[in-house]
Image: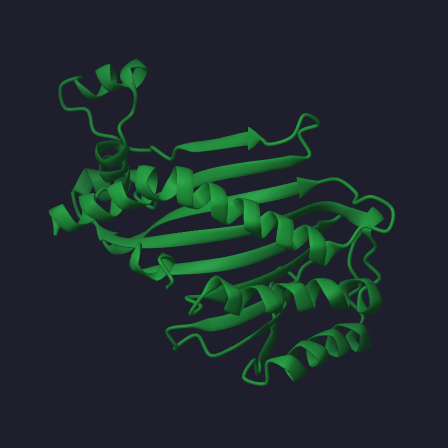
Length: 248
């Protein structure tokens, strides 16, 4: 049973490989890479070049669930939105990492960082920062500020990074992103937009000689899910879900 799809309006499972050196951008190389991805996922038919130079191959976004792979100057990204299970997303990420050394000349030495992320979008029409503060609390050091007459939260995006190893190369990161701005608060008019929660586990630096991107990905996935289920779902995601439900 997939518990993630019941926690928010949308969720997504991403892999990001950041490189120290620029990735190839030659026409033949890029098209061969995406052609190989499409061979495994034939419904990924939309190919385009963004204004920032990124090359993207994706499925139709009008579906509830869709896939995306992109190549930027120094990043390879693989994403699956609303997969049936996490297991449905991981093979796509692994494929991108398997192809990168042979088709994009990326070696374990060239790794700046590799991460596995599970993110959640909560649609909410209202002051995002106010809701996050109410749902998660601000801690005694900051709560007094909210007692100031007329004060309202305007920018409250909690984030925390943790070192998981003594050398700090393996880290976990939790980030909450709100989308309320001062203009909306001033007018007391709020569009329905997403509050995003991102939780990732990262491996920084070059991999050991002979190290495997795919093996590291599976390690990051295992640790990400373990920490998410033990430390984030009931402590962060459920409170946000309940607070939005009560407001509705």
